[in-house]
Length: 113
Length: 111
Image 1 (cartoon, each protein chain N blue to C red):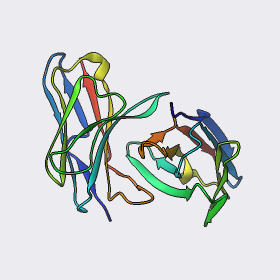
Image 2: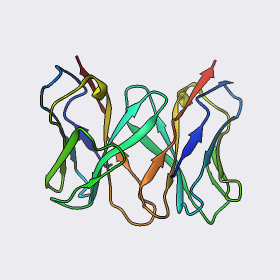
Image 3: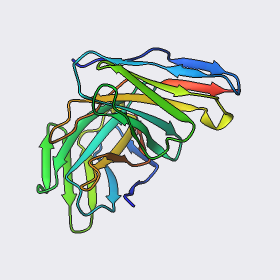
Image 4: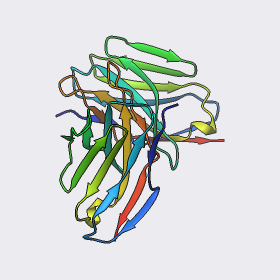
């Protein structure tokens, strides 16, 4: 089975801190994604990557950056955390191709105080 | 732009059928998906359908696609308490190839 592992289940940070959310997948997938999930808004795409060292902006990239130095690892960075970035963050990976089936991690609930 | 809409909540009794509905706007969608999210977990792909199909059945799950009306539904037969979860509809945009998710429908199964 594909496993997508997010390093933290819960995080509490203070406004202005730099925050790193880590994600690792073990199935040699080409594509990786970061979403945030908010009640009533569903999932919104922040950034994605189709290859090592490659990144593309999603629908809500403002206030975020990403890093993909190795194929299996995709990091989401909040340069200066703000309270409106309190959310559930979900990482996903896929092999691509026709059906683009995403495999998700369990999520990181981030609270910014 | 592309948009996917779902009702927020559905309550059914154990043993009944559940029908979760979804509408989308992108007429060039290639694939449509149903994902399930159990409490405290990430999303898990339940099933998907290619846009040139109108029905797909997989055990207790039946997906119906009305491409003309841009309407997708998921029917769960003999609903069990373990089916209680949030169900997300998603479509793969024909132009962007990105997945667009709906807001999710919380299915509550009463014993």
